[in-house]
Amino acid sequence: MSFFTQELMKCTEQFDGRKCIGNAMYIPLGKNNRLKLHFSTLGYADRYEALSLNVVDKNNGVIDRIRINFKDIWGKKQVSNPNFQDGIIPYIWNDGNKADWYVYKPTPRDMEILSEQISDYAELFMEQSMELKESDYPTMSM
Image 1 (cartoon, one colour):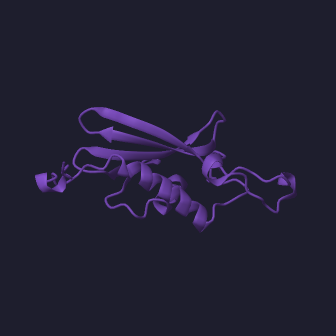
Image 2 (spheres, rainbow, N blue to C red; image 1 turned 30 degrees about the horizontal axis):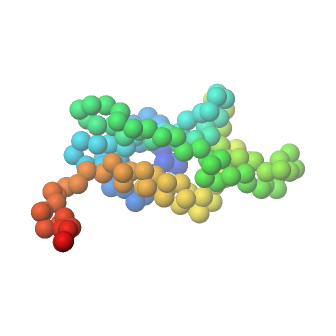
C-alpha cells in the first residue's frame, strides 16, 4: 500500500467497501454511484496540496467533482522548524522515491476535519436504498 492510499485510509474509516487502485480510492455510495478520492497538486509538481473528490455514476461517468484544499480546511500550521517561522500550509511532497508530509504532519484532529468534509460531500450523492412511502411526505392542511 502506498503512502497516498495509507493516508486516504486514515480519513475514510467511516466508509464500508473502500477499494484502493493505484493511488486512488473508490467508495460505493449506492448501486450506481462511487466516490473517487485522490491527492492532487495545485501547480507544483510532486507537491500535493489538496484532495480531489469525484462522484462517478457507473453508467454516466463523472457527475460532480470538488477539490478540498488543505489550506482552506487546516490553514497555516506553526512548526518548530526555524525555516518556517511564519508556519506552513500542509502538503505531501513526493521526492520520487518517497512521499510524506512536508515539515508538518497532520494531527488526528486534522484528519478528522478532513474526514468530516469527505462525509458531508459523500452524503449529497448517496443513493437511497428504499423508496419513500407516501406517508413519509408531509401533508398540508388548510
